[in-house]
Image (cartoon, rainbow, N blue to C red; front, side, top):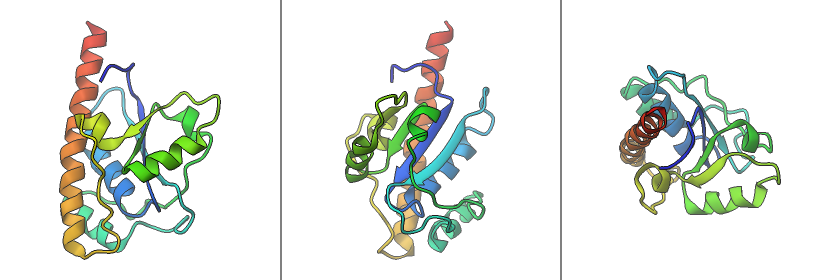
Length: 163
């Protein structure tokens, strides 16, 4: 990824209670010792869950991996997010299309599909909301793999720009 140093990432999914909070929690954990610190948040494109914690299955899945999502609260993406974050990553192509419809003229964030930016793969992260607990485990593992790749890419970009 050829990009200036990324210091903030916003993960975005549909309702901000499953995929994006898990992605934010995983990425925060993976980047915990990064200097400078990486700001990581999550948002949704829909209003259904604003102010609510993540889905209980997302919380339980994350807890099994040592990540606490209990303090997270769903929110919608805002116009300010397009200026406040360096990178806005959609969890699927439908959410990405929705995000592109909201981009203000003075946006500074790079916007992309999570898998495409993390690993050059045009692939959606499946939404586990209407499935069972095992779907959350599968999605967690998929997000963790992509987040590891993303953090490695960010580190290599920063190393190259420092040289």
